[in-house]
Image (cartoon, rainbow, N blue to C red):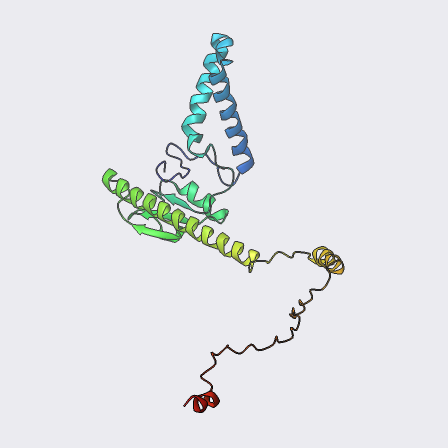
Length: 222
């Protein structure tokens, strides 16, 4: 029970543990009060007679209620070693609607048990085997439940978030400012082509030629 973190009763089943839950809670509260008195030193301040009486009461409550000290609600199921010896516990569980899982020997009535485990409920080795298997099953079931809870929470979170939202940016102020800036900007103009001034052509100068011999004088000389 300690390995799988379950509640237990291993000394004596107190009548009304399930059917008289309010009274059991008062006894558990008394147990916690006496433990607190022992831890903070108030028990040592009492007289020897009173301290001895409270110490005996504390031991008795620990013996019967230490396994269910932190149990605040009725269990969802109960595992019983010997349904014949613990007939009162089985009857209370059936009366409160708590399913019973029990080792059923030849001297037990299987009709009083919801989930029957045929076996020897007297041998110590058999009891250790059955309790270890029940503890393993509890641990495995708890892990599976935790995994399913995580998957369910993740699915709910994904469904709640939905598609990624695009943040809206108000650009009206920027557009208004851009429009005002455009009113003060003069439109660009293309540069006019540069025309060179026309020049008049100068006189054409022919190259000078040397004069040849005068043919008219040639005949006269001869």
